Amino acid sequence: MSATRYTRMTHLWQHITALVLLAASTSMAFASELRTGQPAPAITLDTLDGRHIPLETLRGKTVILTFWATWCDPCRNELPLLSHYAQEHAQDNLVVLGFSLDTPDTLAQVREVASRLSFPTGLLGDPHVPGYGRIWRLPVSFVIDRNGLLVHDGWKDKQPEFTRERLERVVTPLLEKPSH
Image (cartoon, rainbow, N blue to C red; front, side, top):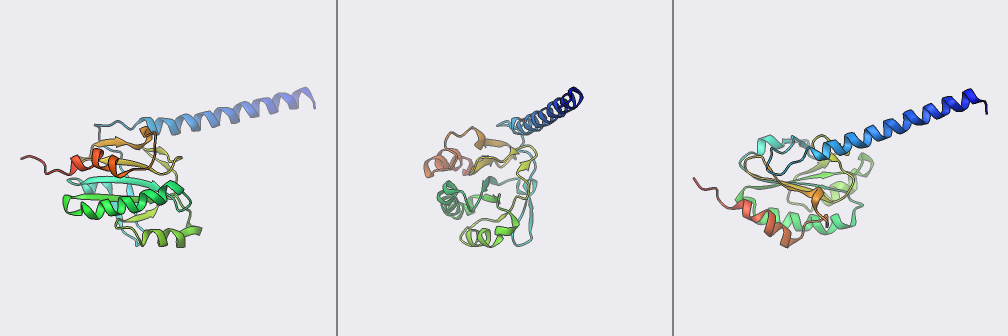
């Protein structure tokens, strides 16, 4: 290989490395935008039945955003639990929104899982979610209070899936009637 060709290839690899690092840092920057006690980043669920549910329209409700996939084993445990919890607390203004990381070619499996859930579900489409970062670990969930503030950042959970105990500790206190 000639010295000129070697130099060009070295520069090309340097540029590729720089782009990869930039992409990784941008993804990390999105995730680092999350701050508990601050307004939750905007997101809209496009449901399997064609509805659009923007987070900002749910002000006054406690919201759990959960990201899952049909191929995710821990999700299979968490989804029925979240579904039951959502049913139990629907009268307490709890809303769960499910974002599936599955691709359109597995839509039949997503619909099958969603048919057993009590909350709306849709395909995420792109794992890079502005404000929440790149969804790389499943399941991951975020909790937003009635005022639209992020109160639980799922990226900080050592165990990713919600348990009944964690729901009782994190979400149930938010469901209490606000004092006037």
